[in-house]
Length: 234
Image (cartoon, rainbow, N blue to C red; front, side, top):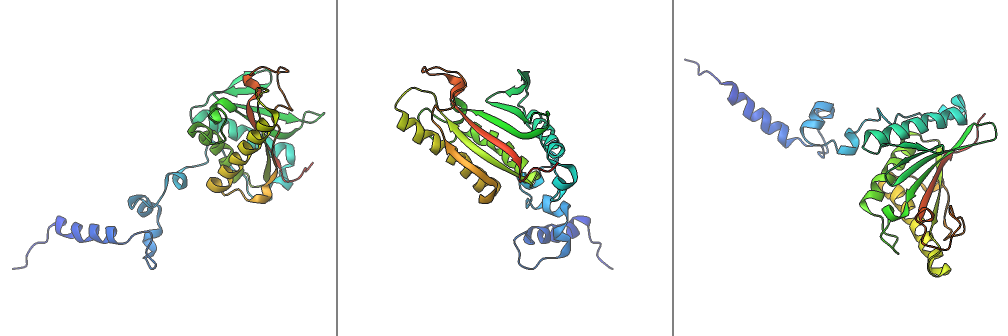
């Protein structure tokens, strides 16, 4: 009499097989490349699993097809959506979008065509007082910029660090330069933004004040990231 094989008897070896075949195997069956298996074995990281539904993306060559202004309009809309979807709502203030610790501005030419995006990160949110070490909140905000530059590959950026006027100018100048370099390192190491996409990375102490005062003005303490295209296309 043939012994009946239960479904659990079949399942156990199959389960063990799936467990033993992992994503790092040198040789592995084709079915291990499927999305279902990748998710099952935990091979898909949070970043890889993330979709660009809210941020959107454009392929290489889109800049020539769309032109600079339309290319940046898509980036602007996507970046705003991505911030808001992740819990940073914006309020329109004086033509800018202002959120918690961050501000998004449009830089337009005389004909109102979009030429750059400016992301301003609050210095008090981004760094401990007197230091150039990024806070977790700063890394979260910078990650949005990094994601955007990854999704829109025909972009580059300029980074500027700014301080208030309290303290020695030489110390503030060094601090502002160090802070801009910290932002650059974060974009390079975490988001793989290559060196050639950084047009300028510098610090200016209090040389470019928003509020003209020698006092400890909060608005003057900031990091600015300008994101534009690799070239102007009309």
